[in-house]
Length: 87
Image 1 (cartoon, rainbow, N blue to C red):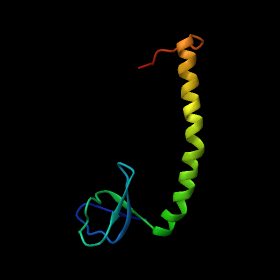
Image 2: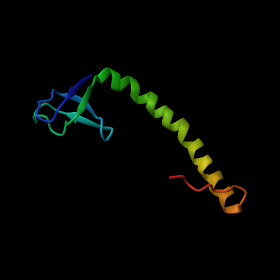
Image 3: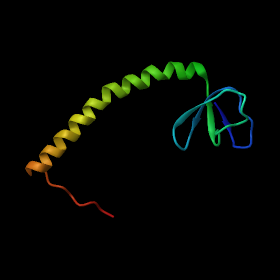
Image 4: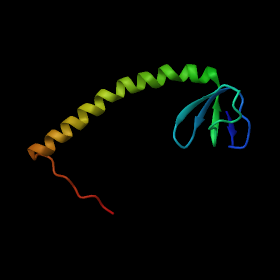
């Protein structure tokens, strides 16, 4: 992975913005469009990680939804006490 700054011309490819976690595609025609503090991601790595990250999201999201639903239900019934946040 190669880091780029705003004033450098970027090559064609996929770039990951480290601040916003946004994937930016650069076509090579526009010189460094929105690649400030971005890291170039190899295409093979992106193709390899995409299904893995998608499967992780599909498996994790239902459990998070169930946990939030149960937490809210227990709070409304009064079986669970809410601790005040510490500063």
